[in-house]
Length: 187
Image (cartoon, rainbow, N blue to C red):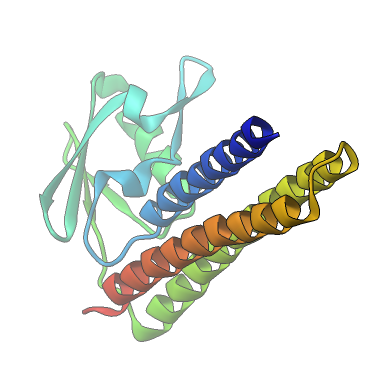
């Protein structure tokens, strides 16, 4: 029975770790004022009739903290890349110099910063809900083991262990959110 409990704990840790990774990925898409190539990660470009991620058709780099450059590998698609950035609706306006796109990232207003913090909180809440769902699944598996003859003491200990795992992941989410919130609100 203890092998089954260890398997439940490991599965809970793995699925919760995936939730944390997903949260990190989603929060990296929320800009905190500095220009980063990941700001364009969701941009799709029409390339020979199919929608293609911008990273597969252009080189994206930062000139400074407020400027991105996008250099398509083929000059012929420069306008298509610019259209893709505009259609992504991320609030960026690319300027063409004939060879590459230069994107000035505007400084965030206080109102926009508050909006981004709300979005970050929403993403962290989604992660917490997912982890709570994993807790419910783990508790259901423990109940099945109880029906198969697991003692009351072991059931109680297992439930406490599951809650302890959940608490550790929830506190990690809170720390990640606090870091993101402070980076968004720092001017």
